[in-house]
Length: 175
Image 1 (spheres, one colour):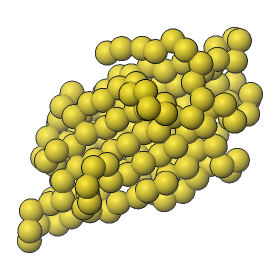
Image 2 (cartoon, one colour):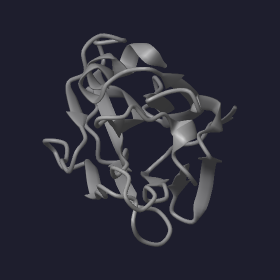
Image 3 (cartoon, one colour):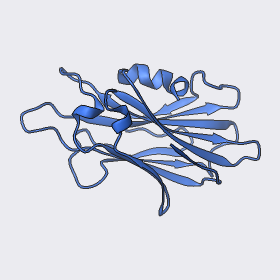
Image 4 (tube, helix red, strand yellow):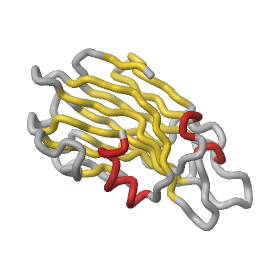
């Protein structure tokens, strides 16, 4: 676990995984972000960005959404523009969830999973999600705004056994 204590501007969260073996159901992993306002604490988020969506103000965008993991490098990419996020937002939690089909999959079942968090060319954190190998969902990062308005980053992988709908409603309480 590590922390970066500097003001953050535009951050990119990238996710990769290998496609399922031929003849097997496809793996679909998704990046999820939940934004919380000043008084919300760990309660319900103001909004959730996931499954090919963006925030109402355009500051959090899922730029690339893969349903199979096919391609080179990172398959899904989410951009978070903290330098543009309204002052009413004080916390953003980011996670990864596996869309489940007929046979339950965990991160340990999916080959070559990985997440990278970067600001520009500066890599803030990477993980192969091994810390969450038994989970079907995981929180990966928490971004908080301090009293001076500076955004800080805390990297922490925590695995959970939750379906996508449940995970998105509980994301803030799971960090």
